[in-house]
Length: 332
Image 1: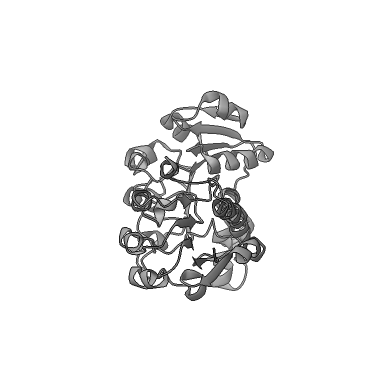
Image 2 (image 1 turned 120 degrees about the vertical axis):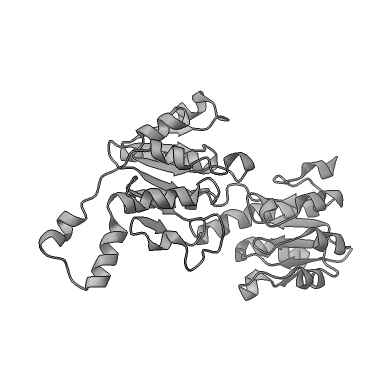
């Protein structure tokens, strides 16, 4: 039998591609080549005669899957392929969907710690004022006084959601000598203790924490779990960080609390509706740090997903079940 055809739209490590190139005829396109998401109609055309699709950001809709008569395997370079791929449609056609769990947990966890340090030590505020003034302030504006921050040491950090990223954040916080509180009703107290944390309810966590960081999954149950009431429970000196998805926080309530200085500050890498609009209220706040959904974006993240995906495709080519198949029911 001749080589199968693969269409690759995801950034992919060259070393991880080498063994695949020996077994497959590979064509590149989509986001990898154009830096714009391929349209469904474009993807349908590209998948003519293609058996393997390797994708990350480009959307793979039901219509694309149903139209692609020869497609036999979808490799999604994401922890949750459902974000960009209709997994149910693939399952109905008996197409395995490979995923890359844990691909970005280190990058997101490190960025979360970075947010804590930037907020606590007021680094962004100081940088912005220096760029605006082009010189150090004097008198009451003397930066050593104006931008006094707080250390992480001896503070309390509350982690909401104790999955892969939440655990990695806790792991990195150990060296800062902080108290770690965890709210996650689906994780045992024993497991949380193993990571030097203490399991607690949400209100206790919010009342006690100097930094609150959110790492919940994208699910209906997590929408606006931090709303007006929860923000009122937080310390007025506390910081709120969200590097999960945009929906856990009621953004209007948060804006009001930040505007009125009812909490000290916040850092968000995600918002409910992306991309961020030019007139989004968060951009007008001097105590709000917003980044454009980049905490998972690292060269290392690409490497973290490339090699497991490559190995799973090689397993599939040998007739074996991939280790990280997201819809194992296709194997009956």
